[in-house]
Length: 114
Image (cartoon, rainbow, N blue to C red):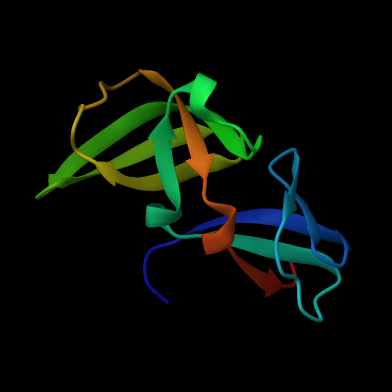
């Protein structure tokens, strides 16, 4: 399956998923009730709070980083556990820096069950 982040979720209606304290619009298929939201590291990015327009974001604190060529892999502590984030290595984030993670909802995957 590869590297991924997992968050408990609830499908509340067709095309609507409650996860991470937010309602996310995404295809749900035949899944209903409890589910797990799978977020690949490249579906998260570190953003400025002011650039989040669709409200799909998490807040957290950088607890680790490594560089993979032109990509930086961050480990970010969030209220929903540790998240792995692959982001452009343009501006290195420091350990203990508080960040906002933008979630690319079109790149999320929903798994049946919790």
